[in-house]
Length: 517
Image 1: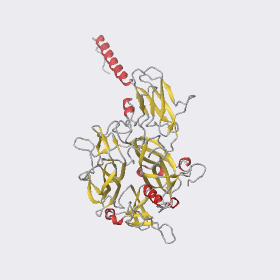
Image 2: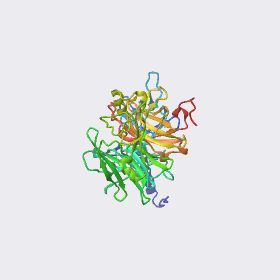
Image 3: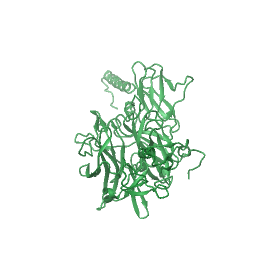
Image 4: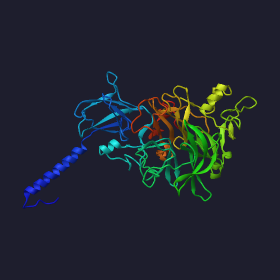
């Protein structure tokens, strides 16, 4: 501290008064907000995506730490009732059935609300988009990621692909929104992040380092010629002849409404930081890299299996085979040469389905199966890849997802979304199998949404914790395909991370079956 000038005590008092006024002004500025934090009653962790709505329909949504920074003019220093709701979480009702809480917001005040989790999976944070920790920043709370408000201009991103490439996690997304235009990028923006060992824990967040232009903004990395967006799938890392890793993907060119008019294979160049075309082929080709891949060793051979969400397409795990469509096989009951317009079921002389690994053959999917059932070529009880709701015994139509080996369960585990469930593409299911390509155990719903989509879920095995007991997965949260008239600000059209505890018997198979090992 600077000592007071002995000859000018009044000047010292003026300096003290100036400092006090300055600190008071800063304190007042910091205390403008009333902090509301919503936490999981079981874990004490902040819950993202909780909506708090006033009586006059002013809505606030918690950030990834569970905070709302409230400073609504006219409502400060008054009793304010907030309705509280969130997908997969609940707040207890009062005597009139209202689910909410009366608060008295004051500048600089803070309160905590608890919600009960009804989902088996725990919502952790938003991975992409703007304002991930907006309210925490306004409240000057600590945040775990380096870009908590806006990262290189990305406001929203569709469907994620990931792979561990050259010692880092490689991320790629579909159509992406920028501040200047709703679909500012539609040919695959990409990023890298560090593996969790020795860096940010996956339960805290992900620091995405995007591939950017000279101005530091996110860019397209897969600009293939032709009309419409370029979407990637089947992102796969394989060793080349020189021992260096190569990163491949299948691509599709899309024209309205959602029609594929060209397919092909691309490879990522570490020199240009862009995907470069390696081949193209007709859109109607029966087999190609698709979905989310994983490696499986069978005897002396290793295959890439592609989960779509069932792992019913495979190819030998080397770069030459990946590029050669004639090496791809489908686990199928269709005759080779079948087309989607004219599929022919392959039966043995005794009438049973001839199911096996076949080249030049269409893989099954739920729409094709419905077509075959309606035409009389297939009976519903003959379906070879099915999921059954463990509680009701009813079929679950799996749409997209991922499969990976899990050491904790000693089985392959599937995370998939459901078509035509209780919300359009918003219900997420867990199942597992000891053998590929199945059969799959009865499925358990682990995430639900109220009239909202959450599609293309992707399990990230590189984030698994405690020997695979805890698994992490994310998906696209969007109003698209639902009839909900009100999209969620900031969260809509973005990726949200969840964590599932595979040691919870109720979460996986329901007590008291005791299916856990």
